[in-house]
Length: 384
Image 1: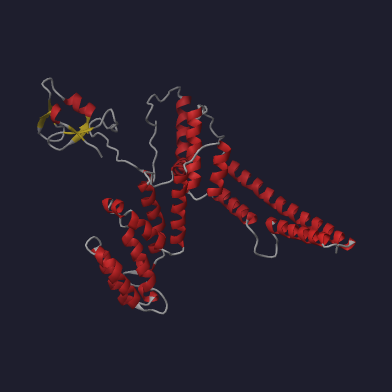
Image 2: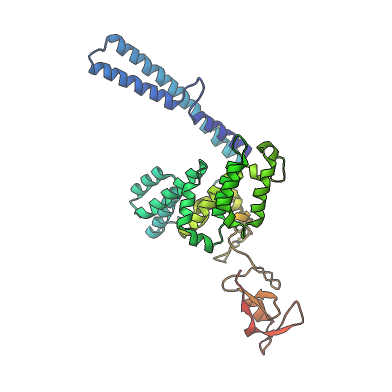
């Protein structure tokens, strides 16, 4: 992917607003609009001359030339990116039957996309999409997403006030989840005070005494680390100490995903953005492997008959593994809802089908891993 990514970086640099001598398309258009407004004001003031129109004509021609040259560079960049992609991905994209043919399926897809725009803070795009699709998103739901991004932006500015206010309103929810959010918010503020210039541990210690003391029973070790880090001031010395992680930006930046996770969980939504997860998994190689398996099976004139399973194993990143998978030690097959894990009285676990096959006519089962015998009726389903 080095080739396509390199061309994409070049294209991004071309489309960014230029800070050097070369003007961008936006700045050229802005200058042209300003020139037109000035001429319009002169016409209204009856102070226009023939030279004014000549100068305006020259300005339009010059800016049009600049824009054409810049557009040509961008088009060439797009063409080079396309060639790099074609060179990297030699196989044509697979074709499938329409997956969202019914009106209900299409409406569900459009709503998912609209919620994605809202959740990721693309509010103007979301409004345009919602209007064009003629769908209805409850105002209350829009407000909640706006609040989420208002608080996240405040955290980016190292302002924990809005996040603490939300945490106070939802403290019972956070308490039931044993969430460390409030502690980490106060820890972030403590570290900022500790590393402020000029070095002075007094404000940080006072803040810890007022806000962090109550968290000691649940976060004793971390509390002790925070207090001991005071001995390693200033910041340069702390960065060489056993508490160097407290001087890292991650103490503050990690608050943003943590808060978004708690906020979305409180709304009954997944902690990750669904469309982003789909893109990460599919673009991370899953679609390519599935298509390759489909091609091989087609060449062998065989089909995959299981409706809820894939013909091959897809390796997922740890953050995309949402449940434990139990493989029966007897049949070597993964458990399903129809074939769940069953724990015998001895504590060993096998799948329901294996348990049934090992059962004798009187219902007794000998564990395949120990001498213990039990009955099939005494086996309990296990939920991971």
